[in-house]
Amino acid sequence: MATAQLSHSIRIHKAPKEAVFPCQITNEHESLIMVKKLFATSISCVTYLRGLFPESSYEEGHLDDLSLKILREDKKCPGSLHIIRWIRGCFDALEKRYLHMAVLTLYTNPKEPEKVTEIYQFKFKYTKEGATMDFDSSSTTFESGTNSEDVKKASVLLMRKLYILMQNLGPLPNDVIITMKLHYYNAVTPHNYHPPGFKEGVNSHFLLFDGEPVNLQAGLVSTGFHSMKLKVTTEATRVSDLENRVFQESSTTEIAHQGLDCDEEEEECNNHIQRMNFVYSQQSSESSRKKRKVSQPVKVFIPDRK
Image (spheres, rainbow, N blue to C red):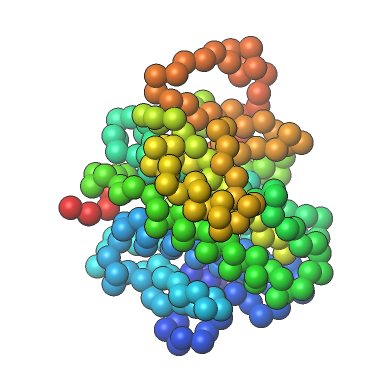
């Protein structure tokens, strides 16, 4: 896909009535556009509401009555260029149907990137017809040929829930560092493949939090061709007030103590989320697991938030 088309998938013109997502989803191409835009919009939501970039790095977008901030290429803000380059790299892997999971990670110590503050997991699946977006296993899943209006409703619900999560998390440290790792479907991904902006990455055995980690499932959207699942992980103490509010919004939101997301029918992920003072051994199972191919950014960056 041409660069101009990728940029259009990320950016939204300022006309207040312009639709963020396609009006119809009747084939794999339209589904791919939908998935790309929902992924880019979700990343924009995270970066905006976590205060990673200035207001000038965003444009206005609308999804029904929901006002959105869409990240744009702001040459005065190098961080926005980094994120957009990562998003485009994900687009390349999505087009090729290689991408299994994109993991946006925030941490503070450059010498200890495994000690994290927040994790955002975007997991993708592809049907025989095409691709789907899975946000929450307990949400309604729309099958192939689904009504485009139903997909839009599910997307609106997802964005509302994500906004609630972001607005109720504790503030980030000023010295936060951002990175993104891409996990692939090994069976179809060439050994030497890495999308633009990424290089060979290390498939870590674990990630660490200072406190007890908790997972917040954001929801499920499926087009019948693609699916994407979003899970937010942070310390339980930072979302204690949020838990009840989210359950009041929707009973499908689920909080679970577990590691990086993986399905029983797929290769097992060998990533685990632990407390820093909690130690456990997995020597017998670790050696039998096949590592999933991983890419990491050519360069991580530190937003100027002081």
